[in-house]
Structure formats: C-alpha cells, structure tokens
Image (tube, rainbow, N blue to C red; front, side):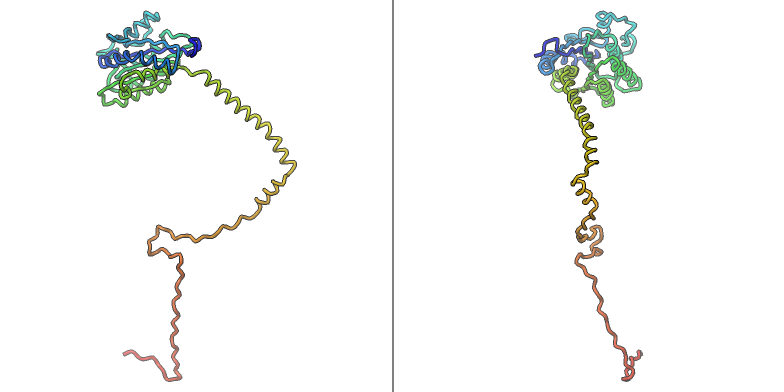
Length: 313
C-alpha cells in the first residue's frame, strides 16, 4: 500500500441545490457516502478531502450542513461582494438555491484548495444552471459558458448529476449539464443512472477525480524514447544500404530488371456469361450457334423445252 506521502491529493467539493425537489437526493447521497469512500479507498486510493455544501441553504439530517456562501465567507475569508452567487432576496422563488453556474464560478475562484491537489466539484440539481427553471434559455447557455471558461482557467473538474424532472425539455437540460462536465473533464450522470443509490456513482466521481499516476506517464515516455531511437537508427543505416546497392549491382537487381521488362503472360480467356439484367428472351444461349437458312434453289425455266409459267387468271 502506498504511504500518505505517495498518494495523489484530491479535493472534492460536493454541492447540491436546496430546492425541495432535491431533498431525497441529499438524503440518499449522504447515506451512501461512507460506502462510496470505502470502495474508492480500495479501488483508487488517494489523499481525499470531501466538503459538502448547499446552494444558499442546507439540508437537515444530511452531510450538507453548510452553505456555499457561509463556507467561502467564514472559512475562506472571502468578501461578500466578491461572490457571484446570488442570495434568496435577489431572485424570486427558489432561483438563488438553484444558481448552479455562478456557484461553480465561486467554488473555482475562492475555495481553499490544497497545494498540488486535484480540484474537483460534484454538482447536483434538477433545474437549469442560471437561477433554476425548467427550460434551457440563452441566459442559461451563456452562464454555463462563463462557468466552463473559469473552470478551465483554474483547473477545476466539474462532475454533474441531473435529477428527475417533468420538464418537456429534459433532454436539453441533461445535455447542458453534460456539456459542462465534458468541457472540464468530468463525468455526467442522470436520475436514470442512479440505480439503487448513489454509492457507485459517488465512487466513480472520486476515482475519476484522482490525478493520473506518474508511473503510467513514465512508461509511455520510455516507449516514445525507444521509438525515437529506433527511427534514428533506421535513418542512420539507410544511406549505407543505398550506397551499396548503387555502386555494386547484384544478381537480384538483374533478375528484378528482367522480370520487369518481360511481357505479361496472356490471361486465360473464359466465356463471359450473359448479362442477368436482360429479359430471358433476349439472353443469348452460351452454346448458341447462329442458324443458317437453307438455300432454296429455284428452277430456272428452260424455254427451249416449251415450258412457261402458268398465267394467273
């Protein structure tokens, strides 16, 4: 087993919207946390740090006992004016609790990441990324574009989960969540992939957030070096072989020249079958020989014998 100093460092922030429709997901994910971390420790060990946060709120009886705003301002010492996420009074309904794109910006820019740690975030929601809602509008796409740009700049990997919804634009909402994950190197999940719980999903997120092992890179580098050396050796020996073949013609080259100048052998002729697309009455028989009409010899009248053609009446 690797020592803690050799394990890759992973900081994973799990963020969920706090609208009432995500309550079951918050409870189930919290219940599956221990099993998922144990499985990840066995399959993909890492120096893992998990932080559970809610968007402008918390969930009772779950691990989501702090909000994103409270953690960034109290733990990280970020000024309120520096946060992009909006408060409940700023948006009608539960829009501020589903303001996912801006929360991604704040986590990417202001979270207290450890040095040399892989930065990852797992965002769970069932609404659009800009102030919630059940439709994908131009404002949602623009907000997602800004979040992707900041995540790429700061090296944040964003995993997403889109929950159950009755929206007729469900496919478009899922595609937008998947677009954010794909652009940042994360994984995208939907309600249908949850199965019996969140244990396998969370384990997959933890393992995918683990940085690449250095041994694999070293092996690939050695393979690349070997290939380069082989190419260089081939380039070095090529001029010598070319010179030898130019200065001393061999018997093999003479045979090659003779074979090249020899006329090609006549191809065996085979009867061509009749085309199948012609009607049967127009297809010539392979064994058909043209018939010759019999020559009819007409008697030449001999007038000297007193013969003459009979006159027609």
